[in-house]
Length: 592
Image (cartoon, rainbow, N blue to C red; front, side, top):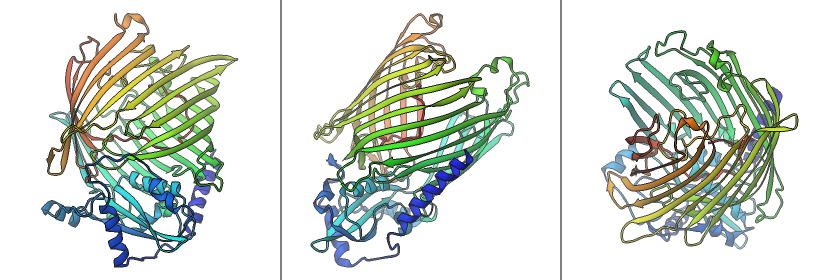
């Protein structure tokens, strides 16, 4: 398996380096005529508050097949908007931001390109690269503009606008329990993230714990993202229930476009529990484990037809979780969390996916990419857990729809099961749907509605956990409430306002959530219907790196252990984003 990991890394590095040689990286062609033309092109777009719903490849279709002569990088400062160059925000705040911020280097943008000079223009590939740049955590928005320079050739102008990459966070669970974090998501403008957190707890020994993380985007233009970290704060891939220390290394190369061939990843971590709360030896779970996780895949059916997006992606994954020290408590000997696990999974994915560009889904006016199309995944493999060796088979599907009026929907379904001696166990089935309404604009506000509904069923559970409601009802997390069958429904309305305070915008929301859970065993509670309502406000400054701030109140009239009838929570750095990955690592059909 180590050879397999090395093979994946060599392949991913090779593809990126070979592609990089296809272009001259140091060209700088920036004449005044072209720059002015770029600004005019931007200013012809709708105002920053206007909704757009267009296919992402639409602006590039008239230039299909033209030869790309030059690729030019242009940057917009904090005083300008991507959507209207006539608007300027020159004030003390933008001046300070521009002076403190390190603008992303042109070489970093070029390292994240997979379009090349002297190649025919593929509208879909151009749209994929525009979206990929927009997804980088240090880029607020990106726009690719085509300029015709001859009957058969064009120049591409790539316009980007950074987010203010310096940030901090503070969270607290009491007067003597809080965390402080500082980070730079674009250190020296080189597409690298450095962050550290400090945790302070009165009943902890030592009183202070910390973590540190470093990440580099697209190493050497290979599109491989590298991450390394160390933590004393139990925020790595923690499996156990104690405070864990860990150090880890991750490499990840996503499938950036259906026209790319390779994707893969690698994670190695060392994790151990630390008795920072001075629990008695008889109660403290003292354990140590390692994780090795590697996967790689190849994209088939890449033909010469630019508009053919049907693809077959084949992937293989190896995962090993090994305990070098297990808890001594007898009750934990049969707990899957504290036992070795190993699996090998192979997966075939059939997909055809494109994107619409719109606004006001999760963001407060920035461009957001909504996927539509279909994905069908078939998985098979072998697993060893709790001394059992079992075969596995699973399948899932995703279908996305987008209407021209701005509404869109997603339907997902999946089933997976293990086999031992031709008998199935730990079978899981799910089906759910999500519908976002079009954006309504009564007066100066914007309103979007959300409807989510889902069904899940588990059968013959042996080692896997039963279903819960922890993700189905927001804020509803009872200590022990498990079931074999679940139905859920969520209705949510979000109001995007024009209120602003020092660049922060506000979006109140209200949600009604309902669920039916067939509880096992029945004696845990006398009821199976649970409902609640939550509401609050989301606050975000799109120019800053940290995520949305959410103030949310909860009301759950159901009397369940571990759940308060009324509660309130402030969450910082909430990451709300519509997922648009083409493929994922092979995995089991997941429980929620």
